[in-house]
Length: 80
Image (tube, rainbow, N blue to C red; front, side, top):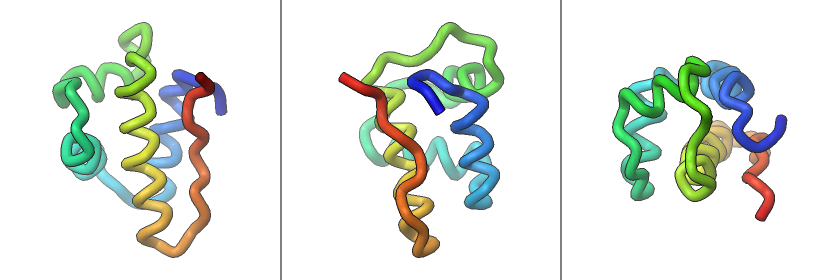
């Protein structure tokens, strides 16, 4: 999975059983600044991408979901 891989992030979300609303709540709780419509548009592939910090917060929210299930962090962060 590469930086800005929206489909990969959405597949990871499905793998851990999070709805998009649940993912957005986790992302927002971490300080995410993009609204839910923007996150949905990104995950649907309807936007160019997210700023790195926003992308990494979304990834962190997913990785926390993996951790909550006792799984290794599976989603790579963007490379700086």
